[in-house]
Image (tube, helix red, strand yellow):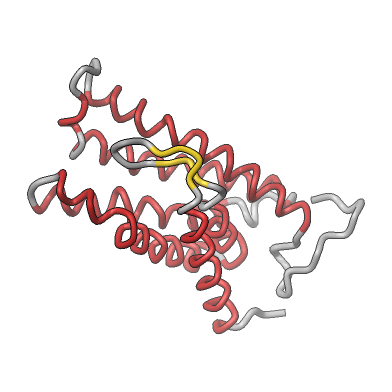
Length: 197
């Protein structure tokens, strides 16, 4: 059964809203941005897995824009120049969150086991998001690397400290949900007990 564009848009809007709400439930927050949240990446990864790279990337980008507007505008006070603003906008928000939806779609067709496919996609998505923040850390947040052995080590350690935990939380969340719900079905059927994921 084909899923209508209206249904896809509705599901994407709901998942973006859910991701935004979950992003406010922070287990740990770093002083210069970055936090471990209560499964906030999961809804965007699911949209990518469910509806493909285009819908996932679009949903992630909208979510990133909301993150910037609702929680990240203060960061613009700490960087200077048009190039730094553009890197901040794209690498810390738009691209960084767009890859969550892209990651969700990566293994959808190549791995038959749904839990494994979405879990691997969540790990890939988190790794791509980390790379975005790492690049941002090296290029525009280097001034905060004082006391570290170098800007590369600073960015790797700072961004890795919360992104590794976010990755683990996202992989667990998506894989667990995939055991209960068939994300490939048009009407999100519950998975039958005893049937492989």
